[in-house]
Image (cartoon, rainbow, N blue to C red; front, side, top):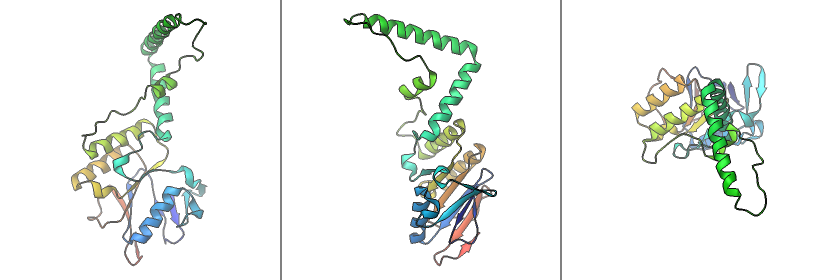
Length: 227
């Protein structure tokens, strides 16, 4: 995918071959760029832009999953839930023994609950058939995390979940480097590439020289571009 801002000389490539880094050193422009990408408004944004896949223009509102702060990772975003439950369901269907045991266990649960319902005056029954996707959603199936886990561990779990869910959107992180050490950021890059995810980092601070896993685009304080 290519991100083409109206005021930029060259497009920004975002794919799974490298982690793309847009370093905007001018704070006013940085704010406008972040706001525009997060809005999904495309050419109607404060900093107008369009998204392209080869010669086909993409719908701006559907291309990025925005992580405005790594301290508030969007674990429950709908972009994950559908892919995770669909993959989980396929895995269960492919394992005949597991599928049979799960269905038998649910039948026992339903029978016990129906027995308790006999204490009511009227007649009651379950009106919805058992469905794995609904079960996973009802019981909050998701990544296990602890509040005291290091941030880099949570970020790696987040990337692994995106891989498990076969995330179609590109991940957009804002000022991620501020929260990580050099070694932690290297771990993040390695996991992003391993997971075959499309990742765009929008940063406002000058960084060390280009890493092998990065594809960097720089706009300095004077709005001069360096691709």
